Image 1: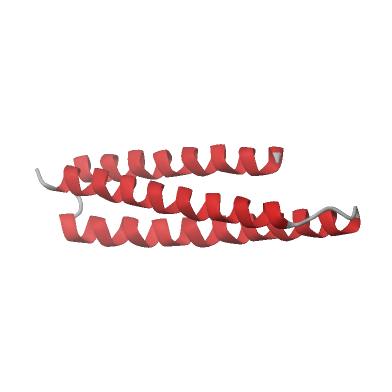
Image 2: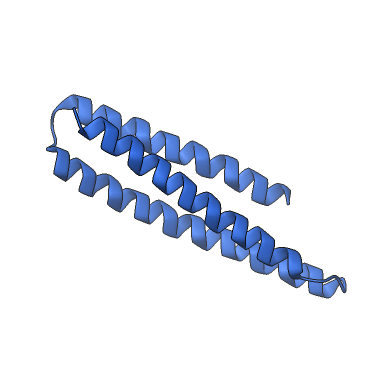
Length: 104
């Protein structure tokens, strides 16, 4: 579980780093709003894919260890549901924040 918690902390830090980077690029004036949105949507998708890959490797590892030790694996579904909800929440939060910045 510590690995999942660490992953969540790193995920949130990475998202905030991405937002900070986007704000810097926006303030530089080097990009149009639509170009900037495209760039950071793509970066977000790549970040999500990498996060999914790490998460599901950890989840499979957890499930295997539970099975090896004769424990029920029901909790893995709860962990997965939490991850999916977290991703959805953070994605919406970041997109809303980006839309607010682009309204100016």
